[in-house]
Length: 415
Image (cartoon, rainbow, N blue to C red):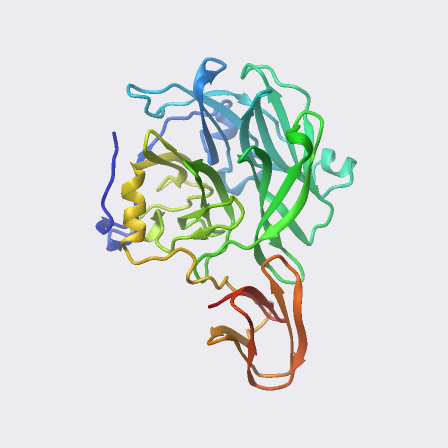
């Protein structure tokens, strides 16, 4: 068992220099998960989604879906389903076997972001399509589709689950279907692309009667997770342990993975300290993690870029640690989840507005008259004005807000 319980350690970085690791976990082991059609996919995999099915499904307890993305080639970003068998003691597999490519390369556009979900009907494999003929034919720019299998071999006809009709934003990126206290929901990473690029957190989609066979998801709420400054919520996974919901997430740069928690499955607060990071491990490109707790052990699956191979190629790795030790590592480092909550600003020109939290409100410093909008965490506009002063304070009640100007969007926590 690869139990790691070291919080501060010294590692050799990729440039052979020493770096101080400020991670809660250590780099784990590389798994064996060869792709079908190696001449097309080159055994490259990222964006894993791993699920454990107690009692087994199709003769196996462990299932994973992942997608190739060798050299950033979106034409091969197809969902590939894998199965594995427990090792002695019920430990997760180190070797995975492909059950097949679930959706092949479309004539135009591309697939992405696979996810799996198990219910009484069987195993669902979902993925997102971007600009494909199947999207366009039903009036969507992007959409989440899925197929159901009752044996892990044969699959039903592809079914639509959720979609975006505009190219200016997307709220079902990295779709994750989970059961939250008896309610099946789809969670998506929410991004605005125009007129400026900014992460808006999570979108939550609900489905009538928990019926994935006959119904599709409808977006019901947008929420803003609380995480450290300059982090952008990109690709993620969720799981439940005991009475708490957890989320692991990597930013767009894929250089670290954070852990967040929630009591209601809606409002997540993230620890500042990474589970793993490029700085702490010398590895890179952790493009979308997956995680769970099984028998008291926290397992983290993530891709790692192979060194010295061009074009860029990734393999799936796994790290593990006693969950109680992981939480102690995070909390005993003096990190309180969600204390620092400003998001990274994405500027369309030179940043001429500085936004920061201050006593009893938000401090704004601007070099010219600036239109300022303040939104609640649920996206409701609560303040709008064109300010002519160079330096001023907006007084706000305690809470989390998004302050939007012509040049940036910043999430602020007023305490």
